[in-house]
Image (cartoon, rainbow, N blue to C red; front, side, top):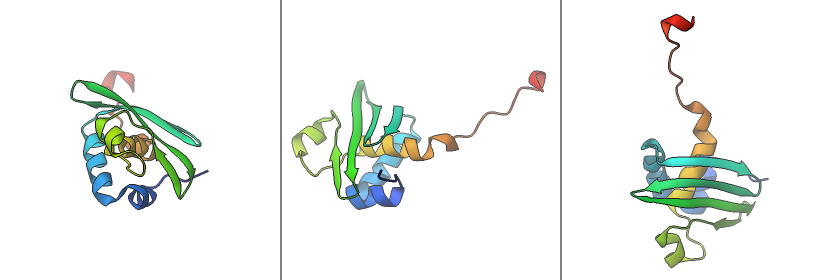
Length: 107
């Protein structure tokens, strides 16, 4: 099983893609994300479109982008898009979202 880390994502996609993916995630555009090795799957909203995004992680050197975005379809093999990396970031950091404080009536 491939361990998901930002360092791994930068190695396979490049830091510029990771930075763009961070923006996508910070904007709340990742609508779903789950990692069931070897598949990382999720959905990302971009404008009015919802992209099925993710990665097939066979090994640390065998990674396939599985996003329905135009860039992924045009660039083809070897290109990992920010949508798929944003899904990975959601899996990595998903539990780090701050929880709202309890309302005074629920204490």
